[in-house]
Length: 439
Image (cartoon, rainbow, N blue to C red):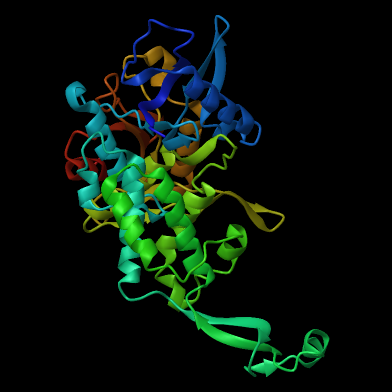
């Protein structure tokens, strides 16, 4: 089936062409799908809305003048339906390059995704980041999985001893006497035995083969299809998994011999079980790989601070303090600032990242800063204060056309101040990190 490919960004609107026959697509902002694809996507979202916590729904369904529409929220990634819809959801990154916005956005997105913690995206290579704009993100993911499997199979297919119990024509291993009498009381030419066999048909290889077979159906890229078929030829003696959940449970990544397959297993979970940051499912779906953009932004900024903070001690998700230090002899309500920076030459910084759009001209609306975020940073400031010095507090947001400059600092009390700073993906990242450290 030929795929119908569309791109949209966070907070974009999806409508049906049937309802708006003369409408034109606005790249990344507003798209109009043929009714077969819109209905399939709408059904998929509707079936899953009740299973998501209210704050974690990737989509919002609504009507406008009795016409249904889908609003993308703050999740990004890829969705494919069985009807052939391929939808890429990209982050709303303001790059000031309208002629090449799609390609640049995709490149930045993949660069950020590479540093998402507890994910296999670390093996997205520089070549993947330079892929042309019409090279689908799903094909980048598939290519990354292929590269990881190729890397492991170059040392040979993993074998292990598998316990068998079956009727054989000669004594082998341990004779199961009671079962042998039951099965072979009139057949003296066979023996029911229990024995171990050194075989490649183990849970790990069955999962890999099942993933490759699924990707063979999903991929439209000739090079990926060729590479998958080549890998499958090495797995001819391996069965595909008949119980994926059971086979995953048999893979013990704490075993040092299997630890090197961790990335392969993580990729396989994503492809076979749609195991990303959502738990969407449905019979209209081939694939759903969706991630909350605030988590990607948070992990990427943590990576940049660690990379460019020479001479500083960087702590991420620091667990040093609790909001309540004692309640019935227990500490409660742990504080988890995204980044804490300690330096011998500068004041301590406590940084929180927020993937939200601010407006530096909307002073009466507090620049769209959440009151909860202001309270949160105040709590950090009080707990990280010492008798001699207050920390410098920083809220870090993505830049956008309405937020390009640092706001005037907010003063909580005394010397406890909050800086609200934009992070611009079009500017030198090292310089921006060093600027924040020096505030």
